[in-house]
Image 1: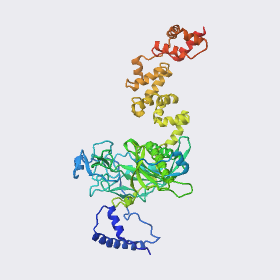
Image 2 (image 1 turned 90 degrees about the vertical axis):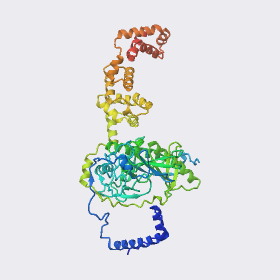
Image 3 (image 1 turned 135 degrees about the horizontal axis):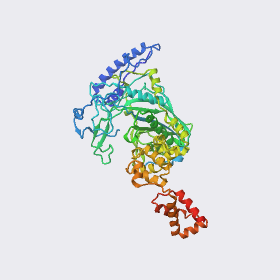
Length: 101
Length: 498
């Protein structure tokens, strides 16, 4: 029997902070419920997968295609910057960064 | 605020340093790790991009085969266990230089697992550095912070981002904790990173120019007393010079020792090396901001490399730098010191080519480490950047051997080549350099010199040979430097004996 993980309110708040998503109290409660349902499903899978089942890293039974190291036409600088809210000297303008590197 | 530091020798006498290095090496593939954008240093900003390197919605990464092969070669050089199946994972963090808000790296299934590298220290002893892993990941873009008075991030009004570097393949080589180096910790670290540089250059998988950011290291270090548990470590990020790595370790050992000595606690934090202050400075404390929430990248399936392919790559491996150095030292008959000087001057290839072009090892070494190195230092450039080739040096050596040039004229010839007057033969022809081998002319010049300096003649005859230089100098002036000093010496000796 695998112990069922339960998401606490603090964990949800922390995940929200790490993902930089502001969560309201209502959203935290809703997510807590939903994530616990998902966790429960995963627990069931873990119970079925005994020690005789080898761990799977990826469910897709194919390997990555490795492409040759050949260059193709890049985007023009204008195209690359087309979606930027603000540009300067051919570069994207980003808001100032506080404290973190 | 200046931090309290303990004297280095005291610090390493009281505490054992345990350190670890994460060395990032940019691979010199033609295109990026996950998209076919061409990579070039110093291009127009944001001109080497595809939708993938910009992380645009709907774009999908496709792995560059050459990047994987390069990484395997490095893995082989570092004696790593190479995984037949490896996996890319998302490392999630928010920073404007990372357009996707995650870096594609490897986590629990890296391409290269455990290995080791034996590094040679200055005294010839060998220190084994154990490698934890060497995984493949993509690089971030480059931020320029504007508006801050001191150019640092604090106080900047906004940042400009160039994503050309985003997606360039990197290998991150992570060591296991390295203990037992004691006071030689900085030396071992420097030797290790230099050895990595030499290896990636020999493999031709990276330009490995630290000044262009092709190589940079994160330096972890903690102190503890023998028999006690390991201490708390600091991590100094993105150190991009060999000296910086060594100085970071010295500084951190002194700083942490001072804290521990006062009964304080070392903070687990990220620091950076400040070259202008010759100190590390604290950044942010390590907290859950470093919870990267790795998970397998659903856009990429596992990378499979067969044993056969790995063996094929193994066959293509060139001679490794350490073995090559040992072989050349033996072949050239250099002493340890001469070999180290040649290495430090980055002159090994040049000396090898000069010898291949016909020069003797001693002659090749003398020029590259003497006159030419001095000129390179003065101009602040590398030996390769000077307008003189190994073939030129071999030609000068040939001219000395044939007797056309003496040491002085040879130096003038080399200096002529260095100042852009052309090939050695052209410089010689232009100035009419030619050792005066006509003994009659030399004898006349010696006689003139002796006649003009009767006091010196008296001293020489009395057995005081010190003023000999003055006579040779006078003869050299008279012959415009084209006399052979040995011959002049011989004639003077004959004359004063009479």
